Image (spheres, rainbow, N blue to C red):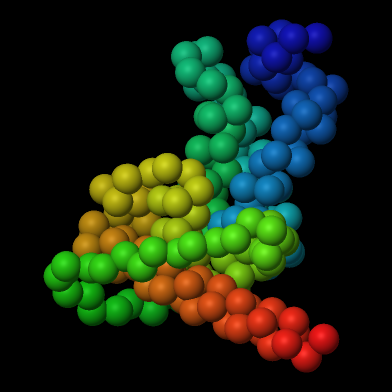
Length: 183
């Protein structure tokens, strides 16, 4: 069955088609959930909530644009909505010339697993802004609207996330140098 046929059947609330759609996209969408969730359990909850919304709103998908992009947007919005409902720590941010640190990564020295782990360890807001901007390509204006923060706060949070990541990478580099020296 083609994606178009599957979508059509899901619009008619066919349970087998919904299950097939879930099986087809749940892996990719769970990876998105992990990026925007505090932990594995919250990512599972976000995926479940997102699929409930997807099945409820699938009639709104008119076939314009990427279906996978539409699904991803629902997943991201679901995670952001959960984040906004949680306790918020607001910081006063002055929109000055925010310097974004350069991060140089030797791909042979750092595994993807390590990089994903340090991104996951970022404080919630920093992780969300970093993922939206650096990994998913949203603008600061879009991020500000989605997270209900100012553009300056988005820029500041991104700069702080990059600084933390740079420090963790530098720390790992120095540990690798010590390990090589000791050997």
